[in-house]
Length: 83
Image (cartoon, rainbow, N blue to C red; front, side):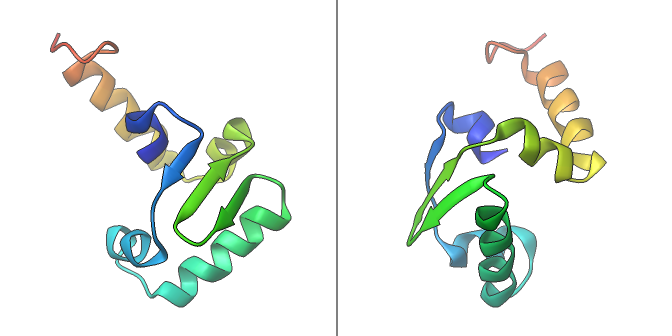
């Protein structure tokens, strides 16, 4: 979702911020980021994420991503204009 809003493969975001968004510990973010990096989906270095495989990232995310994205697009509109 951050990439959706940033319109970029490059995201300046910390483990701490991600942990706060998900309501989890930083250690869990570190583990997951490492797994995603091992799978070639992202490259993560301190405070910076590059999404390499957007389709792969969407595939492994839960169904709630698509539901929230569709609702956001419906309410805000694809171009940021309310429908």
